[in-house]
Image (cartoon, rainbow, N blue to C red; front, side, top):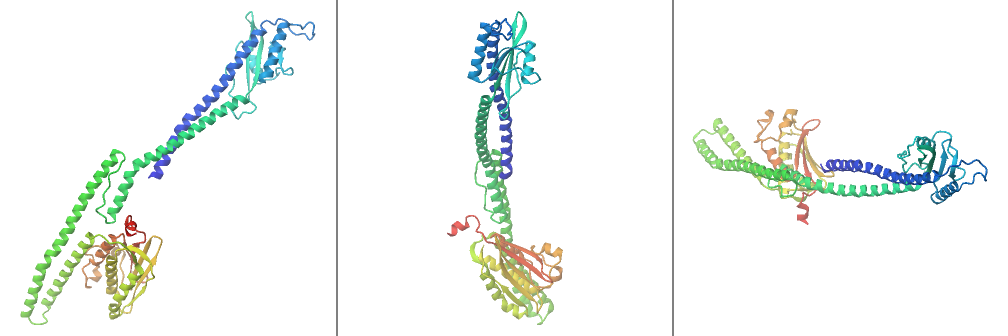
Length: 476
């Protein structure tokens, strides 16, 4: 969940920062240009004030062109260009220069920025908002024009053509500062998002781990008190209350099954004893009394299995790092005499491999599965036990050559008291595989069933190879 929530928060915060950063960057560029424009307007106004007193139009003769006011204006323009590198000039309405610097700079005859600014000033409107020049516009220039007004008429125009390198450098520097600020803000936002998601999701992770523990049989697990939003803390308390109630109900159910099994044993034992006494008074070989004996023994076996099932579901697994191959080989050797007696080949492929299991519980589970396989495997067929190891689990696969199960039967195999209608005459209570599954589940093991080709049943027992949380540290 954190991997999905954190990118969403980061994208949202990046969008907010960009939405603030772009207008700020535009504002910085506009402010820098406006500052330059205001300076140029002040300069052109000063030159326009000097040009108002120039009354003679240059004619080309040095004698006749002697005009101290125009010479003063020309000196000012020359000095201005020399110091600032800005082209500046005063031009009559017909574009003839009154004074200009540098000397080879004239108004262009075609359209363009300078010509447009000149035409605008002729209409008594100075330049206030020239096109924006961005840092990547290397050839960009700022043209400002102001009219020279005498007796209410525009007699000339002052034009400045300014390079923008310095202004673009300042704008770029401002943008770099904004970028640095945005980056710092983004880092802070990512840190805040990490803390926020950790604070919000910590109770969820604890709740998920506790749910997994309960689902795998550790019913005593509870959600520890943790921080987080009030709603999640309230959910954790509600979950603990629910887990307490579920554990109480299951405990009552187990206690009932165990008590009922235990309490019925004495009356059943007394009943079986009376049946034996009654059999002494009947002719030997009486079929009815033999049937009653068989049913009584079967009922005693069911009660024993019920008690074993209640204990299996209640007992905590004593997990140890176990050599699964060695343990499986021992069970194969223990069952081989019975298999030979029934004419069934019992083979084992049990290489050494380890897993975390309760040795007693795993032995009991393997005994139940092997016993079940030998029951239904006909004479001359084979039961094979094979141990394999994968990355995360060690598996023990038991295959037999019996009649197997249908799809509907495979969906129900392992349920309590369930037995196939085809196998009702085979001795058993229908609880053996249920007990095995309960024994394995308490230690994180699994049991799966499928068809074995060409015939028979395949039972796969899975054992985790990784130590459960806290178990590995406890064993060190």
